[in-house]
Length: 231
Length: 208
Image (cartoon, rainbow over all chains, first blue to last red; front, side, top):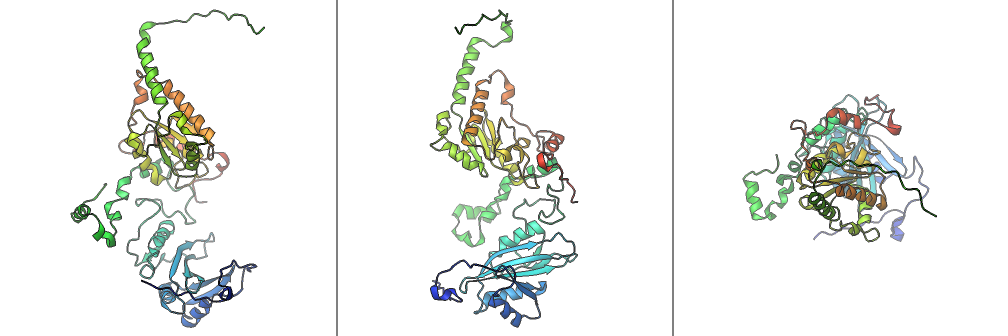
């Protein structure tokens, strides 16, 4: 059995009830204490930090992101134990770099921190995966790869998640991607209909490795023999 | 006093050997009457139209009045596929497979703007009308259509069923897609159907 300790901090500590903050300024305001701690610990890797609408954004250089997030997760004074989102932003301006964004939440300290890392245009779109820190990064990074084409180094199963796996038109949320896709409608439909729908929900996908021992006997036997559905 | 002059007499030509016999037409009527009043729907609800479909099936509008109270969640026991909602390209092979699994006779209702034309989703991910994937009998417009609209579409389908003739085998032809491309209508027609319309004519396929 696990025990969870809730540490009450800030103004809310006295009442104990969460409340929506009012009159939050656009820029500035009280920064998350983790930003200062990061600046002290990883000053060489932190590019800058800012507070936007009351939420702290820390810009970290791409090579150190994993190290920084690992520390935020493990350090007893930070304890960011919940990764709520991994996404990316591409700006219309051709010179502005692509940003990869991690949304971290510390449940014990009730803190929210946004980590951003900028990949300059022309550089290979690669960054370290945080899969071995947060398992929730699995599908989030796959989605980010699917939509933006950012490769996460160290992700165990980096493939498309929203679009089908043989999708050939590129990465839909990139700014150079035309709204209707690159191919004609008939070509898009032809490629989509060439999919085998049953191959997408294969027994391999359903038999999660951890749950393998709990599968019915006959299904385990069939999986052992390497049986595949579809295709 | 409400009486009008008698209409002019017209002659009707009747060639007995070109017509079906009385027994066949009566049998058709009986079979069609039975089919039209027990259409089992296969609900393929992907978006907000499915909520309106559920409202249609619920007690206020009561699809049971039309013999449709039995939702068939297996395509093998269904008569009419009701596609309610947008269909992304990733779902295209799935709806095609469901249609092929349904036994003849079968019909299809495309419910709502998205299923019929792609609606506002004129983008890279959404099929521009499910009639490019499967043959559709009735299109119900609306975003989403009110239950009255869907019921009107169902009544139209019932009328279509009532007018079918067993001697006319074309109505029972199974769709045969082109084996190489899996399309059942020519690609040029699909491109034409997918052309921008309405307020989106200024969009072009190029990035600029």
